[in-house]
Image (cartoon, helix red, strand yellow):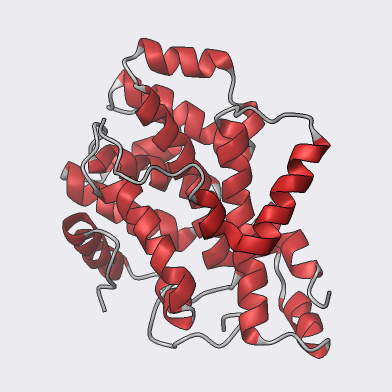
Length: 179
Length: 93
């Protein structure tokens, strides 16, 4: 049972979005700009950042749904699993590793990001906009994760549901619910 | 301030909010929307704070500036204030 009365058939953040459409709108739009709209980082790379931060925050719903979206973009869930457990040794570009290191620090506290972290990302070819978006994706998932868990939303353990959700997110983005 | 206990747990992680915290807020008169908004405000400031600090933005030690800004925000709200720095045309990159 969620802490407040949310629509019963909508899992995770969807129930909270339906409860308060006024706040759902800007939250959906932010996710859409950050994760789905064209950007020099691919949607798969940005979903990996979102998944990694959600796993560090231990949010089941967000890591399962964004992990499924990343798998869909990247055609396989092995890379998703390896990014979550040990991204420095995952089969991803050095630039993405440097950005994930920044994201991991933002997840704990923005002040932990050092000039060296930024230099490493720049050296691996990250632009200012990519560094900005990485910081904001990590920060935004500290919001989404706490929103989902802080309301104690319904988070079913149903792999098929997340695969389907991930496909919908990868194809259509975040502006409209899949339900 | 009925549900101060909610954001305290919420800042550390959403799972820290217990059924007892919520029951206490309710017993003091908090509605579902108020509890929802307390949780979302706490969550949103975990984003805003990390955004501001994660980019190492300039944060002047100038109390008068914050007082003026506070007055403007209290009077006009956040959308109106953002018009002072948002471009009227989309930025081309």
